[in-house]
Length: 394
Image (tube, rainbow, N blue to C red):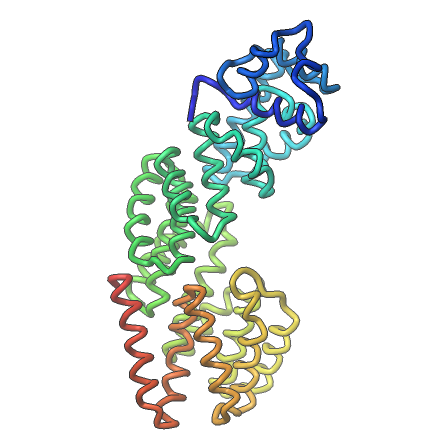
């Protein structure tokens, strides 16, 4: 990272090569080939007037007006503040209206980072410019990159946290660690994010830090700790612009109570999510109705499951989850088909580090093993869950 030299020359070179032009074709009468070479390799900074002339040779209008640049810079600064505090993204809308101007200006690298964050674009170009990005640009680029990759996502997010030193980047790291099943690290980083959010006065990241702690405890049916953290998050959210996020908290609490057989409390929380339909939400209603003797309502919920689109990690497992639910509602849990589908589903959850899902289906699979006198498999299942809990130190 070289804060003294910007990425402008790298971007100029990429545009020149895209058009298939030689250096001397665009620099004659403006600067020497050696000077252009230094600019294009980030060894020398070009002033806006020179860049304007060089870009003109490429048929592009380059923004060099100081007042216009200052105005756009303020909008860019506002964008990063709005995303950090999760405010209404007004600056993003304004910048989109001026995309053709800003992408050929001294703020081009900022615009590419913003595109990576908001639309998942420009990563290959940013990779070329990485050594010449400012600290803020590099931090947000790495954070965007961590959300796009499966491999090394944690390392990129941790580097972004080190550079940006804000609670938003820490919360994004929490999400990645959770997806990796690193629950102990989620709790450790959540405490750091809470302290940083308090220092910043960042309400959203404070609530989300508590929410992530609650979600970890929910994965292991740790009711008291789950409720303590979720209530903290809920108190912050209930009168805020993020009130809709309360639906996710209610879903997780309801699913936890459903998993441990406390159906009245499960229904109390799940009912609060009914205006936010989701695939796994209908799944929980189907099981709740079935296990409380409301068979007709259970089949209606299953029908809605079938019609509802699954997202994220659930998407690839939609048919398996549906099949397990169908067989349970049909009372066909004693056949080999049910056991095979359930075992395959649990294996898929484990491969994807979906330990909360594994915990929910754990008792169902354990009952299958014991009823069939498959005691070794029952023992190995308990060992597997003990290993998971040891790994997370919960």
